Image 1 (cartoon, rainbow, N blue to C red):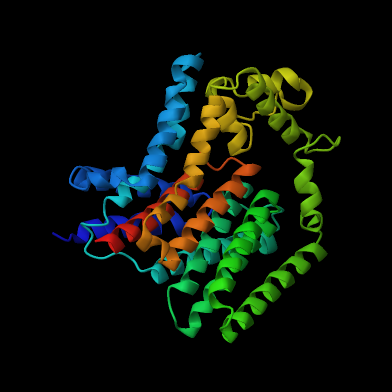
Image 2 (cartoon, rainbow, N blue to C red; image 1 turned 180 degrees about the horizontal axis):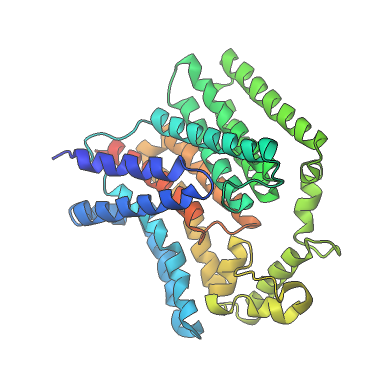
Length: 395
C-alpha cells in the first residue's frame, strides 16, 4: 500500500541535503543518511528489485571494486576506509526503493525549487561573510571549496525546473546556476567555478535544443548571462584575481610553475607515479600520501594533507586501474537511468542525469568530491530522486 512514511523519508533526505549551506551541510548529510537507512530497513527487502537497476548495479560495482583490492594493498586499518568513503552512495539505492511504496513524490518543479532556494541561501550567507564580515574566502564554517562545490551543484540542478513546467515563471530557475557561480566566485574557488560553468554550459545547451523557439527563453537566457557577468565584473574590480585568470590558474595546478599551485601538481604527479608502479590495485588509502611525500618532500611534508585533492587521483592511488573504473562507474550511474525508454523521454530525468555526471566529473578533476560527506551525499540523494522518478514512470 502507498505509504506517507516513504514519501516523508524521500522529502526529508532531499531537503536536509540540499538546503543547508556550509558546515550545516554535514548535519543535513547525516539526516539524509538516517532517512536512507530507515528506507532500507522498512522497504529494502520488499522492493529489492531496485538493486537490479543499472544505476544501482553501477554503484554496487564501484564499491565491490574498491573493496576487492583491500587484500592486495592492506597495510593498516586506514586502508579499510577506502570502500567506506563511497558507502554513502548506497543512499541512491535506498531512496530508489521508495518509488513504489511512496504515496507521492516531489515533482521536478518542487525538487528544482529546493535546489534554487538552497543555492540562494548559500549565496546570501556567503555574501554576508564576504561583504559584511570582510572574510576573503567565505565558507559558512566549511572549507570554502566545499561550500562552493555544494552551491554549484544545487544551483545547477535547479535548471530542471525549466523543463518541468510550461508556466512563464519557470525561467526563474535559470537563476540557480547564477547563484551557484556567485558562491564559487566569492569563495575564490577555481574548481567550483569551472564546475558551475561546465554544468551551466551543458544545461543551457540541452535547454536551447528543447526551447530555443520560445522567445521568453531567449530573453531569460540573456538576463541570466547579464546578471552573471555583472557579478563577475564587480568581483574582478574588487580584486578577485582568480576570476581574472581562471583558465590560466586552473591549468597551473597540473604543472610546476614555481608558484603556490606546485603542491597540487606534486599530488597529481604522485598519483601518476602510483599508476605506473602499481597499475592494477594502487597502494591503498593509507599509503596515498607516501609517494607524494617521498617524491616532493619540500612541497608536501608538513602540510597536513590527507588526500590527493582530486577524485581521479584518489581513486587511482588507493585502488589503481580498478579504482579508476570504480570512479567511472559512479560517474556513469546517472546516465544509466536513461537505459529505460520512458526515462529517456522525461526531460527532467535526462537533464538531471547530464548535469549530475558533468558536475561530479568536473568538480572532481581538481578537488575531492567523493569521500567528502556532503559532496558525496548531495550527488547520491539527487541521483536517488531521479531513480525514484524513473521508477514511478515505469509503474
